[in-house]
Image 1 (cartoon, rainbow, N blue to C red):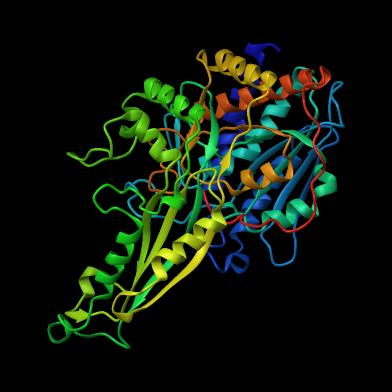
Image 2 (image 1 turned 90 degrees about the vertical axis):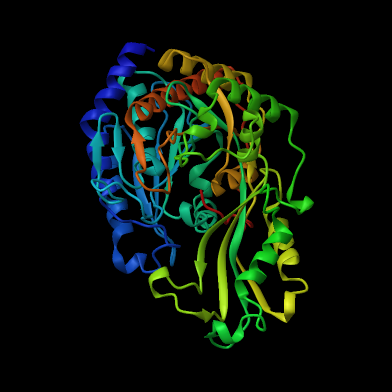
Length: 496
């Protein structure tokens, strides 16, 4: 492989085609179905699919088949099958994954930016979904195009781009089962929906947290009443919620109190966390937009990395029954509801975590209040299998040649339901989980951006790893795995 030609090819394709495509993609408000119940009628998802499909079909990849698969009542999926080339093997397979649905708008965008307003500032392309995860299809095909431009061999490649990931990938198991025979037997899975600790080297994800959560509601009255009349007699639904949350979380430290929601952290992951802390330093926490005077939850950087990747943590992401400040009268409200988002350790069973949540929050309701927990998510996380020597060497070489620095390995705090599912479907596969969501890129939040040089670098690294996969396959170092089994997959709910 000519490293200079690879860089030139990838950079040129990104500049001439991929960035303009992503600009148009950002304009489309194709929110995931959890955030747009009328997504079919609104048509934004179909517009996004058509944009990506059209570009894919235009690429000069001999024998490539591009299909939009639509199962009844489900979000669409883009399926691309690229035959082996230049002496590569068709009986081996590389599976590349991404998604095209987006998180909702969120408030707090700068005045000159917005979720559906693409803004290019230097090396950053602002707008919702460019980095999470619109670039994945473009980066996947660009990596394969770069190999073919140099006449280099690669195995058969399959690209899956789903449209339901931000809602927990609940449609994906049906598609994987439906396409089982056509997917075949991947020995390498490449996922381009993860994060990076900096923009200076290749980062590979070693684990992902699971996710359990839903709507916790406390009702105390049939209707609201005068707060001066009722307070002191009628317990506040908000105070009861505080008491219930106190069963789950230490309000002073944030530690989850339910021991069944913790796991033993593997020694290898502890060692990786220490190395990440050494490389990133204060960037472990100062990538977040802290207010002046705020400080992180621990002074030990390695412990912060483990908090984010291997320990359970609770966030309250929404509320109901609480009027906005400008219309809040002196009323003791009849109910309060909170949306709970509980991140889980990678190896904890998501279904069991959901059951524990219900046991802890619903038993013995204070004052006999009506307490309910509507579980929306109960997703198991993912812990990567040990890297084969060929893949570890390929990842390291790719990072050194593309970035001039060693590859880094780190768990991520988010959830990609597809990874746990693939781990079950393809127990012998190797995984390269990477991405472009680095410091300040703010996925899901305001001013989300794609760091374009990182997108180019990740694309070039993927090309190198696919090439190395072919060489390892010839040496018999890639393990064949059983074809996708049929049947329904349980516990796939969650969102990144």
